[in-house]
Structure formats: C-alpha cells, structure tokens
Image 1 (cartoon, one colour):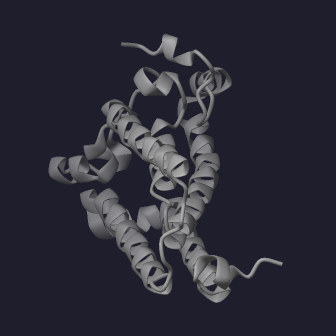
Image 2 (image 1 turned 180 degrees about the vertical axis):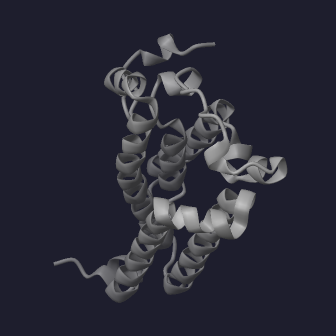
Length: 213
C-alpha cells in the first residue's frame, strides 16, 4: 500500500480537506446559479447581479486556493524526468494558446457582468447571444475549458497543483453536464445538432481543417 505522505509530503487529511473545499466551491457555485437565488440577487443588486455573482465565486475560489496552498505548504516539487517536464510545458503553452484563440468567440464583458452593470440592463432583459460555432468552437464545444485543463495539468509539478488540476477538471466535467442542459433549453435543436457533430473537449483527428478562418 502506498504511503501518501511519504510519496507526496502531504498528509491524507490535508488532501481530503482540500478536496472538500473544492466540493464546497462547486456546491456554492451551483447554489448561486439556481434560478430562485439569482432572482433574489437581481432584486438585491439590480443590474450588478451578474457581476456580484462572479465576485462571490471568485472570492470563494481564492479562499479555497489559499487554504489549499497552506495545507500543501510542506510539500516539495515532484522529481520529474525532463521528458515529462517538457510535455507539461508544451501542455501549458498549448492551454494558453487555446484560451487566447477561444476567447475571441465570447463576450467577456457580458460573461463578467460589467456590460449589464454599465448599461443599466438586467441580464434577463438582454437578448440571447448567438450560438458560437466557429473558430475554436468548431473543434470542440468547450474550448475555454480545454485550455484551462491543459494549463492546469501543464503546471501540475507539485502536489498542490496536481490536486488542483484534478479537482478543477472534475469540477469542469460536472459543470459541463449542467451547462449543456441549459444550452439545449436555450438554443433547442440548433445546439442538439451542434453537440451531435462537435466533440466536447477532445478534437477529432483532422478536425482543424474545418475551423472557420
């Protein structure tokens, strides 16, 4: 049986606590996204509801990461062979590139909530955004998530970063399930067809040839 503390320099208790902190973030984020809670936040914050939602989530995530860093503080970096480190570096670079290109297809002002706040319009009154199917979205349905996963594992050279990568990826995979249910309800058959023809996170071979330029 593997001694977790000997292998990583971190106690099993610390690992479990950090995992539970990520569970708290996932549950909290889901609770805030629930329609009744969003309605209450709209009454409380008005056009700043989306911005407040993101600020609360960011503070929660920051607390999870800060506590996790403290829990894993005694642990040293993994003694990885150079080919593994080279592959991780390539993954991190690829993740950053994917995020940069994928970001062009999204309205981050609206995502963050600054557009609603500055424009004085509640999110529910804004028109539905067009379904993004070009660019990186022609390769995978969730290119931003793909970029984040590549970046997380590309930087996972310590026990803290590795568990963060694992927890973050699990959170993303669970979140995609609920997000796609909302997208089906929002875009109907258009998204159903898009989901049928475009993979979720892993591009199909030679799919890059079909990317709109």
